[in-house]
Length: 284
Image (cartoon, rainbow, N blue to C red; front, side):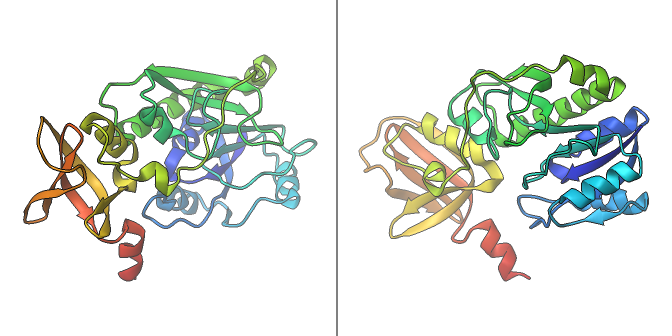
């Protein structure tokens, strides 16, 4: 059996799962990455090692026709941002991996909200690719409990491990999985996170602030300190009563900032006056 992969390193575990079941990759469709939040270095290196054709542009109908001509049985999509044309009459099976327990959590990147909303469980899904994003019948779903102190990094790791397991299971009998696929009913859509979603409001309790810090992790939260805004990658909490105004910088030692919150202090240990994006661009 032969398959093409459309995606980046984010969920390349789907690629690995199909290969582990003996499927032969025939093409890679990926996209430009900033190597800050997204990267495709590993999957591109693997495609080059296998001498696969690599495309960095949006999939068009001609690409699908070419896959059909070379006997491609499946298009496996994971972390690909562009809408893919209908595969009817070309590739026999087209599926997408999505980091949520569909039909809950449709949208471009739902992991933040799973932590912000203190979900007790989350999951990883694979669904039939259809005309709209994340709406096709569900082929497989794996759910797992979330810890009270779940972080962006640990949740992403859970989804990546689940992706590999789901991919292996589907690759063992893909036609059967398509025959058993369950239509989605109801569900929810999570929009892309905004700057407001990422902003720390020091009038809130430290537990709420730390949940926001954990939800975004290396993608950074925003904090207003004095007259400026800083980009926070790591912080810790001290609970306790005090007589400082929320948002007041009460202490600084080297680069560690202690900021008053509603019921304690946020100890900000990794931060920058510029975003990680901007810092990396300055270095280029």
